[in-house]
Amino acid sequence: MDSEPSREWWREAVAYQIYPRSFQDSNGDGIGDLEGIIQRLDYLNDGTRRSLGVDAVWLSPTFPSPMADFGYDVADYCDVHPDFGTLETMDRLIAECHRRGIRVLLDWVPNHTSDRHPWFIESRSSRSNPKRDWYIWRDPKPDGSPPNNWRSVFGGPAWTFDETTGQYYLHSFLKEQPDLNWRNPEVEQAMFDTLRFWFKRGVDGFRIDVIGRILKHPDLPDNPPNPEWQPGERERFSQIWVYNHNFPDVFEAVKRIRRVFDEYPGTVSVGEVFGTPEEIARFYGDDDERGLHLAFNFHFIHEHGHVITPWEAPVLRRIIGNAEASVPSFSQPCFALNNHDRSRFITRHDADGRGRERARAAPLLLLGLRNTPFLYYGEEIGMADVDIPPERQQDPARFRSVGRDPERTPMQWDTSPGRGFTSGEPWLPFGPLSPNVAEQDSDPDSLLNLYRSAVWLRKELAALRRGSLQRLGGDESVVSWLRVAEGAPSVFVAVNTSTEAVTVDVPFRLSSIALCTDRAREGHLRSERLELPPLGAAWVVEGS
Ligand code: GLC
Ligand code: CA
Image (cartoon, rainbow, N blue to C red; front, side, top):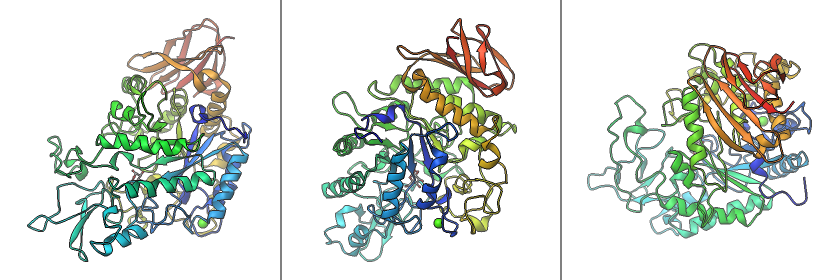
């Protein structure tokens, strides 16, 4: 890589999330590992259009962990879980990525540690332990019940009573994930040092886990009940998270976190955040002081926590418009259509059995927007949720009725018994033989080759890479916009969310279809009208 890396490389990057347990197993234990990722780097980017061409990878947690929440319960922020490899393997992975121009983001989990982290073991050992105040301990109420009414995101009370010292500790997630006390400056400093540890090893940035929860109201008051909640719905929505989610102090802490990133120019922070467009925007900081470089916008997946966002032009247009209007001008949005916590795109949009068709329009939307897009492994071949029989279920979290295993199954490389993923028993069952990489690799019509074309075209077309987004429009069936960069041809993006073919006006006299879900249509456009196939999408480039 360049000896002077461009400081804001992330503005033009396409990123790819790897769930390390499920990408590639190198030693036959059925669990993906870092060595396996290294073996697959050419698939991600070998410098040619035969590869996906991504510019960065984010690895979900790779640290030592009892795996109560599959790595989001960290027992040591500065090492590698033996299932995944060693520090040496990680160093090699970073070097091998950099050799290919791929930046590496790790997953920083600042809100909580594992209950096996040495800090918590000390903290729970006695009320007078110097680390007691590194976590959030409170006396029971006089009747013995928890200090307040907060519910865990995964269900049940957010407090667990500890017999040894007769107090409750707070955990926003599993009881194996005690929340750190970010009001203690020692905690903040210790956590900052974990960032520095990896920056010194060459890591290019971090995805930051549930950053909106690190600071709560100092008095920990009860949350008000949610009047819209119906018994039987997910318990975590039974109250409004006023005092333990996006609490104003979080936005100041985020600026202090940013200063640590600024000690290492060229690094990037990407926050996992939830909220309204305005709340998301606040994570970026302000004109006086910057916050996170990027904050995820998950509104294409869900806007209100549990309601799946429909694939409908007016809804997509509203989400895009809100993000354009709210993210500060010094940065840009950051969208994803999939991740390890949510049902996969195809499954979400398959009520009429046409999820696969919608999945072809997805990359044209995501990579056609002004944003730093994040792909999730397997999305590029159209992996869907996999039914997991009860005896094979692993995820303890009850996000939905089944947990999150269905979207975390092993990458399907080919049709061999181990799917090219493992020579052993995979930790989660495989999906059906198709889709897989091998069948799509040389098929010009495949979803994989559509993704590859989209990523490489984005590199070629400055308007898509760094242009502004203008003339957001369309109608009930179509969402469309223009990407405009000085000195480069403009690009018109149109996505048809209806199941009928539609015709739209193209704002150029001369143009060509650079990419279309129906690949036979690519090429010179003879009129200022563009026909989009049912559920189809196209990128039209100005000029002949
Ligand atoms: C985030 C992660 C999720 C994890 C939770 C607790 O939402 O994406 O996988 O369970 O935080 O760390
Ligand atoms: Ca392995």
